[in-house]
Amino acid sequence: MIPQSYIRFSPPLSLNMRLPSSPRPRVAPIGGTAVQYPAPVLRSISQLAVRIMLDGLTRTITAYLSPIPRPILIYGPDDFPAACADSMDDHCERVLQCLGTDPAATLQALINGGDPPAPPVRIPRQVELWQAKSIMAAMGILDQVEAAISSMPSPQRADVAFAWAGNARLSRHGPTVAALAPALGLSSAQVDAWFIAASAKVV
Image (cartoon, rainbow, N blue to C red; front, side, top):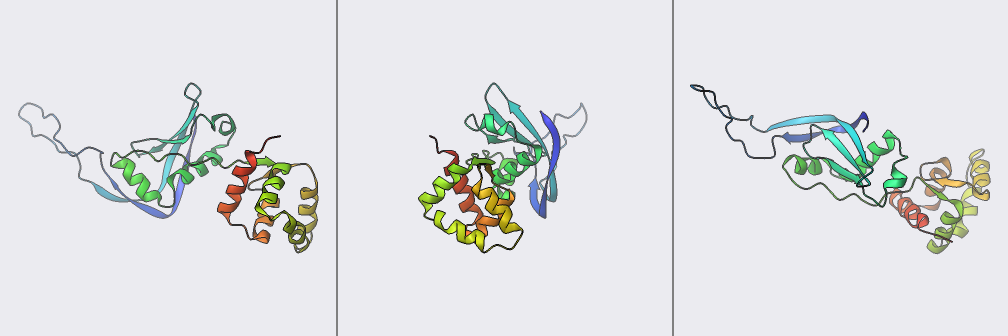
């Protein structure tokens, strides 16, 4: 179990917090009155406590979001080895990715007893530069890189040029990708797809 952290939502989410099963009376003491479970209450949630569980036996990583009653599988066996090295911030980012574009709807479904979402494909944190260049060649944009670098302001131009000419690994959220993506007209989703494809390249 990794130490607890928090996921924050801005703006806050509106969730109908209730037990997943329908209200039913509790056992009443002799001579007493059965007490009903509380009715559903619409609450504004600005943050959720997160605990991450790494299970080496099943090779899975699961997120527990208090007070959401059902956990979320964030990584399966295929991604387990690489994801084990991720930081808590990385895991929190992954939870948000798993919650999708409408986290309120996803969380509400879990509260109501629905199934957790299937985890999306993991975005690699880093790829080898040759892998990135190979996919860019396949995308037909490799020839545009030099022109994109030349158009950057100094000293960013020199930093990106040295990195691109070297043999280092390319970081998904590093300054080189942050500079190249807009210069090449790549959206965040396209960069994610670029890294996923690049990580699959082998020699």
